Amino acid sequence: MSTAASPGGLVIAGERSGVGKTTVTLALLAALAQKSPRVQSFKVGPDYIDPMFHHRATGRPCYNLDPILTSETYVQHCFAHRCQGADFALVEGVMGLFDGASGLSDVASTAHIARLLNLPVLLVVDCSRLSRSVLAILHGYRSLDPRVKLAGVVLNRVGSDRHLELLTQALKSAGLPILGVLRRQDAIALPDRHLGLVPTAELPQLQDILARLAHLGHTCFDWPALTPLLKISTPLGRADTGVCPYPLPPTPPSPPRLAIAQDPAFSFYYPDNLDILTALGADLVPWSPLHDDHPPADIDGLYFGGGFPEMFAAELAANQGLRSTLKTLIHRGLPVYAECGGLMYLATTLVDLDDNPWPMVGVLPTNVRMTGRLTLGYRHALAERTSLLLQAGQSVWGHEFHRSDTETLPPSPLYRLNRYDATQPHITEGWGGHRMHASYLHLHWGGCPEVAQALITVCSQYHRDSRRLKK
Image 1 (cartoon, one colour):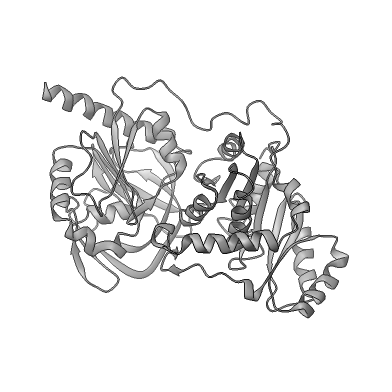
Image 2 (cartoon, helix red, strand yellow):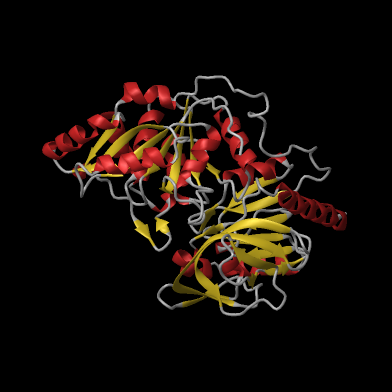
């Protein structure tokens, strides 16, 4: 592992999950955004919803840093590239500081990313049930890996002035500054449900929440100490760290128009993926399967990301004309790529959380049913057959995150999936063929740009063929 020279920035970490690092992160971002329009944020790991909140707080896309889905080098280049032109940079961690993809190491943990980027860490501690014991917690986090530089601590859920006094006295010998204090009464509840926080598009009160978070940000933190840590101020240490993290080949001779389903039902997209498609020459056309009567005109491909189609199954089903049009177009050969929620939409029927069945597009000969079981984790995927994106035998890393399952196994599955820790037998999954790829697996194309290139190639071919037929 190589450590890149950093242009500046700060990592927000938790001593475990649920300590309030997202609240702290959003409070800092919302306050910073009132100081500068150039605040760049990042999120460790394969997360879609937290970055939506970052985006709404700063007005800029939040980029994921994940060395399993991409690579260590990609993480370094992505951070440096996205920080160009920014005034401040902040990285929100995942789980506890040293919690990685398995219990055997801290690979893909917040600590791993902090080391890769050579960034200091601000540790958020839930103080609601401790006082002097906070000293032992910080001693452990500080000593476990001396390569991780703790810049200070945020004391969250402090109960009273007396409680704060006890905590402050305990920390005097630790030599770590207290850079933020949030009281229990300061808590701002972000609504959640079966897959985490409710996405921003479904929160009409979001602007009020962000205003309250900005107030916390301005009043609960030591800004004279924090500002130098957050500021992008030093030049890049290596000439190559700021290079664009994905390839920029020549624009194809037939740039395809790719329809991107973007609405509350389909909102899980890595910004890198959309940027890579654009860099490869695609014209991205946003549209809404919830609200539009037909897909965009003259398109050469469809991209359905993940999201929450189960929460909008009735509305999706009611848009019968669109479902019929999509089924016809796909059967005629329009290329379609669908991840997770997109797969659910292409199925025959979606059985929602209340056990109600709803008709979907119907190009996949299976029903999808919501279950109480969460399928979560990194997957090493080996292509069992050639599809829209992959050649047989090709392998990629992806991530699953869903509470639904198909009632029928594909007769000729796309993938053989192995878990990251390889403790369980592989499973087979995914539907498709030459012009279709539908799977529960989420892919970050920073780790496999050739997959994005394959999508562009097929859509470009469709563009040429369809234009030729019209002549």
